[in-house]
Structure formats: structure tokens, C-alpha cells
Image 1 (tube, helix red, strand yellow):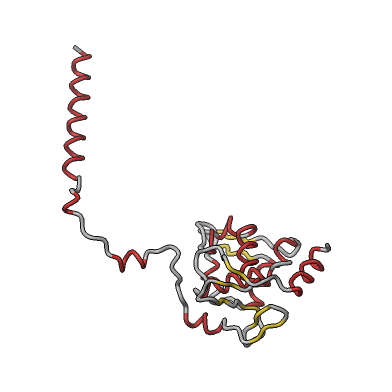
Image 2 (spheres, rainbow, N blue to C red):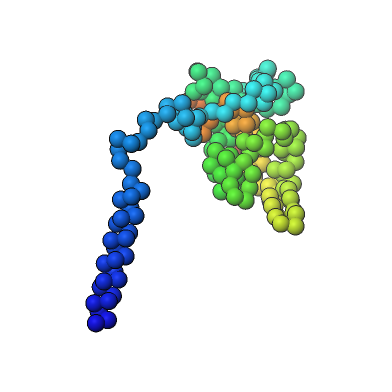
Length: 201
């Protein structure tokens, strides 16, 4: 008798579940047509242009293959209809994904415990960025504790600090989206010399 009751109970649960599923199922003919405009807005690779940051980041000079803005800070240079980047943007992308993305997320998009650097670089100056990178940072409150370590002694980070800044600046302005740079300028001799001196090779 117990066996029959359990079987009946299982059968009743199965029928109830099947009835629930079929009552919420959507038929293909009831589906709304795709909204192409909305789909484009949700493109994870779409560029998010910030005109103010883009204007402030404009390259006005080049020195040894390194582009600089009107204040003399390193910046990006993207050509070929947005497909070709300068060497430092390319190198910064590589260094970021080797050293920074574990905490700050792929493509500088942020994570649950570290901010999106594509947003931070909208307001951080070059000197502030370098200071945080070298000295670290702590944001401690009663409900949260965020600590970024100091990288002053890490040559894999500090020897490429300008590269990181340039890449993150390109992300902050929206000039570069969520993609690995394909086309790039040749590595300048000045970058080769600086790298050799910094790494001690």
C-alpha cells in the first residue's frame, strides 16, 4: 500500500510539473521580432565613446614613436579606421591582460572586488595613475575593504607603466573597444632601449 501511495504521489507531481511547463511555454508565432537597434546597444564589443576624454587624449606630438597629448602625457594613436594601434596601446593591452585583468576584469571592465579601470582613467591624471600603480591604494570603510598592492618593485608592471596607461586611456575614451589589437605599429627603437634598460637585459 505504501508503494502505491508513493507512486501516485510521484505521478501527481510529474503531471503538475508538466502542466506548469506547458502553461508558461511561448510559442514561436507569439515571439516578438528581434530589435536590431537594441541588439547593437547590447554589443559587448561596441565602443563607448566619451567625447570629453577623447578630446583630452588627442595626440598632438610624437617623440621616438611615443604619442603625447598637449600636456606631454603619453597617449594612444589609432589609425586605419580604428583598426591599427600604436605600439604602446598594443603592449599595454598585453601587459594589462598578463598582470591586471585577474582583479580588474578583462578589457578593464572591472570585477566584484576591483573597479573598472576603463572608468577610473576618465578622471585619473597620468601622475595619479603612476602614483597608485607604484604605491598601491586602500579604500576602507565599515562595510568594505579594497586594497590594491604596490607594484613599485615589480618590473613586469613598472617597466611597462606608460604602456598600461596608454591602453587604459584608449579604453576610457572609447577609442578602443573590447578587442585584442590586431594591426599595430612597429616597436620603436626607443621602446626597445627603454625596455632593455629597465629589465636589465
